View (cartoon, rainbow, N blue to C red):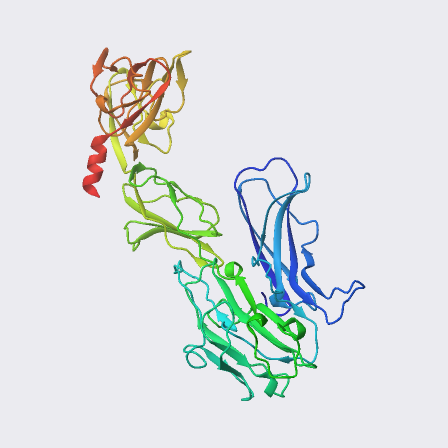
Length: 550
């Protein structure tokens, strides 16, 4: 809630997959939980109303939604409509397809179920004596939000008022120093054990307009599945309207903005009116129970990291990191560092709204660590597990060539793959091989492919770029012209998918074709395949070198 008479609702809509064609709208409405009039406003005698519509925002048409996947956040502010109580108002939101009228999903800021006892609301009355009455339960409960990933622990929190008053940790406010809440033996509500309750002796108190308050200690470790429960009993003295208000704090008792129970006069009574001092019978008690799911919220859980896999090596310095959504998270915080303790951070982002992030260039040839945590309006969740990956080193590799035609390849990730940039001394176009059309001219040389290229004289060309420790090369039925990776790669280490797809040796060209048992960087090779598939080139020598330097 905002200052003054304005309220604010924040709605998060997540579209998990593309929606079918339609006109989708987000509709947001303000509702009041409960209204009681002293006399019926209409002709049917009804004076008590539940879930009363108070307005639609920005209007009844709603807000148009996109059908594209993503998480979208909307904020609506609206004015409190008199005579509504701020603590009694809540917001509902739903997504509807205006073509089919189908409602796809809905949510509310108040998720307490309808109670057997009337819920809190606006009591339109005058001249009441506002006093608090309680038995076997707190009048006000402090329930702090769970922040920074705090874990809620199980167990019951309750007070039976069996030892002293106020109990240890509780606090009683009695502004006029008159009759106030007290311990009373011999009566007890049905929900809890013991033989003691808490009494407010209205019978012997003649004042009016005073409010006494009993504060509970701050209760931590609550879960959204927990409930606030207490029993109460009251008999109305004719001509008077006593009142019981129960408020909950979600900030450790700093403020009490959530009124969960507010009844007075005949609505508070659980027994017939009397002019005698009231001591309830067992049958004259009522029980209030409110699920805390609308008040207690856990911070998001730790996200599951998706890509790259832990321990991946030879990755680009500019890399996309991906993780799975954390339920309840509106944004994510990402950290990348050169140490697992994240003392030396190379990149950080504290307000990512998606579940992926493309990093700016990170240090080459470095082992990096990364982690992610979710954040919602209820706080930040715990960090994910830490994963590591290694970026490719920036290298300069020689490519020996002979006079005339050579089979060459690009064993590095280069910034500009055009033939005049990579091989400025060449005197021909680059030619790849296509099984259907034969040799084809190429302006740029791609990784994993072999090319014919002509030079006027022998020499060595220096290629600069980021190392490639692994590559996946697609092959077709018949002969294929392939390249290799940065480090020498034994032929026996090549993985074949499907198995046995290669049906020939691998051949290099040097004054004729020669079979090889090791693929060298910057050279192209011929190989025959039985059908379409792929081969995986992975350099164990490069990985062993990297392992020694970690």
